Image 1 (cartoon, one colour):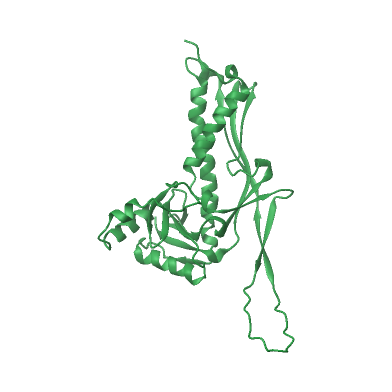
Image 2: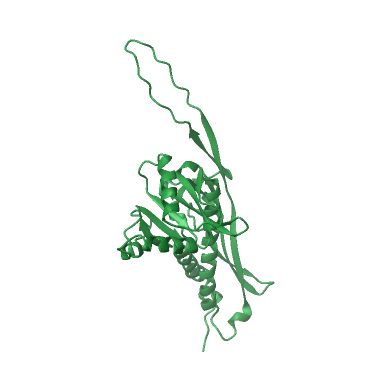
Length: 295
C-alpha cells in the first residue's frame, strides 16, 4: 500500500495543509488573545504609548481670560521579541506509515504550544496591574470576586466589559462558593451568551458569567509565592484591555505567526516551524486587578 509523504504531495500543498492544522489548533487553544488590545509595529522592536494625566474643568468667569491646563504625559513601552517552536520529522517515519498523518498530529501540538506562549506572557502581566485582591493561601470565593470587581469599578472603568481569567482551582473554588449562595445553580454553569463581538459564542476557556463578569480558566495563569498560589486577573477586554499585544508586520499583522516547512537534507528530516514577532505589555494598569488565591 502506497504511503503519502510531504515531498510526494509537493511542498506548497503540504505546507498549506499543515499550516491550516497549526492555525486551527492555536485558535482552539488560546484564551487571552481575543481579550487583548492589539497593534501592529514596523521599523522597531519597541512601540511606545502615551499616558495622559486626568484633567478636570473649572468654573469659568464671564469676561475673564482663562488659563490653559497643563497636560503632562508619560510613555509606556511594549517590547517585541521572537517566538519560535519547531520539530523535525525524520525520514524514518515514512517507513510503513504516512508522514503526512504524523505531521498533522504534530501540527496540532505546535499550534497548542504557540498559543500557550501567548497566554503565558499575557497572563504574567497580572502582577503589573494597579490593584490586587487576595492573600497567600486564601480560597477563591464570592467575596474575593466582588472585591476585585469593586477595585476595577473604583478605577472608573466606565461600564466596560470585565472578564476574569483564573486558574482551574480558582474557578472550582469560586463555583463552590457560588453554588452555596444561589438557588438557581444552573445559571452559573450554563451561560454562553457572552463576549459578543469579541470572541466566538463559546470562547476558549469560558466557565460561566456572574455579576456581569465573564469568567475564564487557563492552566497558564501565573503561579505566585513559590507556586503556593495562583495570580489570575480581572480586566477590561478588547480595545479597552489594559494589556496590549503588539505584532510585528513581518507576521502580516497576525498573532498566530508564520508557519513554514523546510527540508534538512543532512539531518534526513523535514522541519515544521511556527515563528512570530510579538510583545505583550500593560498600557493601562488601572483597568485590571490581580486575583490571588491558593493554587
